[in-house]
Length: 222
Ligand SMILES: N[C@@H](CCC(=O)N[C@@H](CS)C(=O)NCC(=O)O)C(=O)O
Image (cartoon, rainbow, N blue to C red):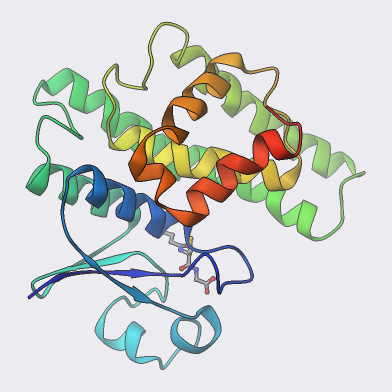
């Protein structure tokens, strides 16, 4: 049975596709795993509480879900770890305990700290509320997170030294900020790291990641 990835197409989705599913697609490409993409529509396939997808595939009604010969796994961080451990040990996750712990640390940070910070800015920007102190506070939180990332990239090309699933997770999340007019010019290490990611065939092949990273130079934010 082929490996299936439940995704949201970048071209047909009003939000430009699923960045969380893009992480899984990039990891599968890095690991040279052939897979079939099952395209989901947010309105018709994911959001209805009685959808077949929620009932049989993922009770949260979100993407990604990976189906490996009937074994279902969801939550992008868990999916990334599964892909790395099954198909790319030593390549997407170091065999060295400390290096792999550092990758997992950044993977957890992306979901628990970075994404909530990004969502704070996202919700206010989408609501047109960019002149309030609440917005300034949200930008403050977000910029402090960027400073943490910038610091980590001071003396290395990738977050754990070698390229890993941590770079895939954050490399799909950080460029979303370009759609929110977040200027990355004060963060030269992040800019150089994004450029390195953009040059990888796995990122270039993933439409929403490529479009997000490309929005930086296009909008003069990098
Ligand atoms: N914590 C989840 C979040 C997944 C998530 O929110 N996926 C979005 C796309 S990036 C989704 O499917 N949203 C469904 C919707 O908008 O209805 C993960 O990391 O996998």
